Image 1: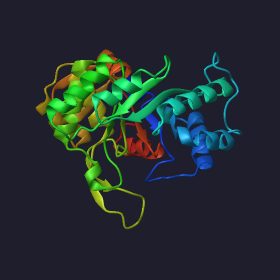
Image 2: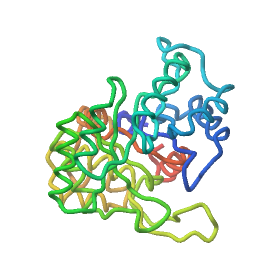
Image 3: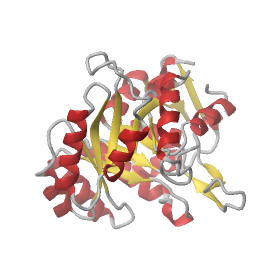
Image 4: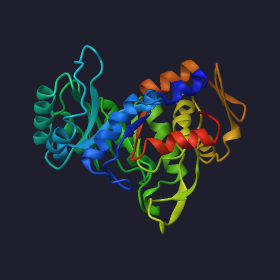
Length: 301
């Protein structure tokens, strides 16, 4: 594997095995995450995703698989917690968890839903240092409303979360809405993560669940989304980003030791690393194996 692809994929997948369509029980999800941390592609694995309301269940289920290397050794699990209706209570629970589980696991990110700027501003007054706050915001509204939301995130030093799919067709945003979101985040220097619907590297039609009779729909690809972020950070316009998001051929992307090229436009490795570190942070997926296997199928791994 070349260096530019590894720069793009490193720590990319936050494991959300608890959530649909996988919807695993806690013990199975924790055990699989532990296995992935020891596997060949552990370098592509990000955080374990767990709701704050299920932290007690997590502590019991993960007791036998959590490491004991200590924070300084770097072997601890990193978690991102999904907040509920009572943010103050959630933050207290997270602080309690981090104190109790120091050396084995740490929650260093929280994901919260917000429909408007006021909700973001109120929540950020409570957010402690050391806990990265991601706000899931709607992106289907008008451009001015989306820009206002993202500017509020920038002003409060918060982060964005975008829903890129789900188990119904209407959960998948249009390419134009997604391109607009990515472009504004790049312009405002707002880091973001994505969630749902990004199991596959490239834009393609796939089943929405693992049920044999599942309906299919057009899905965004994680290579498309995260390369779009890198190109947006380097000035690509929204209409061109739409074209990139809708690219379906892996042959249109050339990864080499210097960077990646798409239709004669190039991002060098330093720009890829900068985008991943400062803009496009990760995506949540209920499967870690499916993205890896699909990358193998198209010859990238």
